[in-house]
Length: 289
Image (cartoon, rainbow, N blue to C red; front, side, top):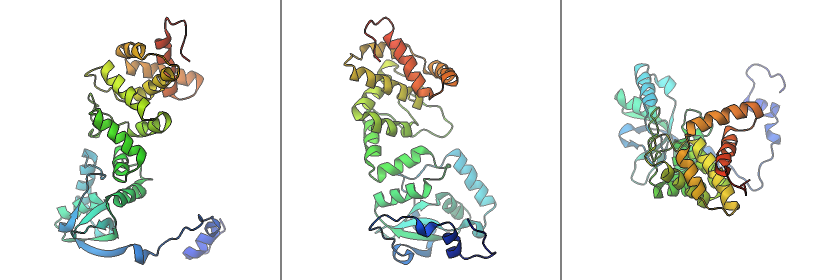
């Protein structure tokens, strides 16, 4: 980047970064901001949150909102992002915590960037706005992808519903039986192994350790799905895996896998799958590889 004079224009800064030389996809067009968005002050009474994709207010969220209320300043508020509905209300895409804080100080209106679109478009916008924000939990991004009709997310959501597995786990809370936070891992495994393997892995885990809390972790799910896929590829019966899983303590297995990873490199989940497969193979002449 070349040295620029103080007060350099955005055009000069853009040129110094070679941004004009970035190849734009053929046929791509960017609509003008005036045609896509509008700015306005809208009544707080007309705002609402669509829980199909928006994140829940956790304990940390409530602490942030209290801090916003205590130190409220319109100069720090910025503008929330909303979409306008056919009934005249506005669905919050980004800024629900700021909007709640404004309501708490009894403000009547808030500044907003307003767009139009159906639920899928709104959810897609939410994902786009929050894709680079580490403060947004993976479960909230997952719910947004489901609402946006992302095929992988929809398949995982359907699978969890059929197995009566909940993803509504409060931040900081332990994972009870038939609960999971591992939606990113589930989406990854859905792409890698397909719905049949993943569904069977989840069902096998639940049946092997009925009532067990903290069971459906990312580690346990990936390890089980990996071994199960190898057994199916080898044409093996899964009864041996059922018996092995019934005796497995996944926390201990993860500790062993972590130590093995430190010695040999790789990922803990892959080492965990190797260790689980060793237990499945114990006593077998025709070992599964």
